[in-house]
Image (cartoon, rainbow, N blue to C red):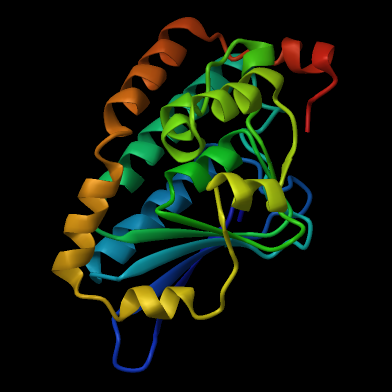
Amino acid sequence: MTGGRNRSGERLGRHSEVAEFLMSSEPRRNAVDHAFLDELGRAIDDAEDRDCAALVLRSALPRVFCSGADLTLPDAERADVSDRLYATYQRMLGSPVIFVADVAGAAVGGGAQLCLAADICMVTPDAWFRFAGAGHGLAVAAWGLVNAVGRHAAADMCLTMRKVDATEAIRLGLATPRRDELVAEIARTDPAARRRLKQLLNAAVREPLERERTGNRENWTGSIEGLHRWGRAE
């Protein structure tokens, strides 16, 4: 198991099933590679096949949610993983399943963008985000951050790659405080209404996401040399 695992859905009383994708690769800090994306894709397939109300993304590790694309990969493979991550964000936005990121600890790079692609991101007090990219040739997260937190705050996060803690993320509207009952509340809603709401809530970010994906695919070699110059490699 390299990136995570899909725990079978749990039935919440009489309500729709809720599935879980549990990331548990401690040595690699839940880094994303092709195997990780394959497993997440299968988890989404399963949740859709069973008409699950929600798929919860969470980590079994105490201090990290997901550290983003695997920095040990060769450049060409890393660039391919990055593009596949964008395809995953697009699939999450278009799926009828509600995605909930349950974040404790660090969500960096692609891990932070998984949270952005989720329909709801709920955080514990020790959660934090870093949208790393601009320091090593990638334009990342603008597709969703502008809509979530506004243009100026989005520019701050994207251009400085600074750490954003849970308190600030909640204040800006990037996340909501963790509530144990949140997923059960989602599962109780009408499925058709959930799907219509999701389409409306995500309408503004689909085109920017495609533009960002295309630009990065056409312009990025996969090199992370800039991260080391910035001293920001996680």
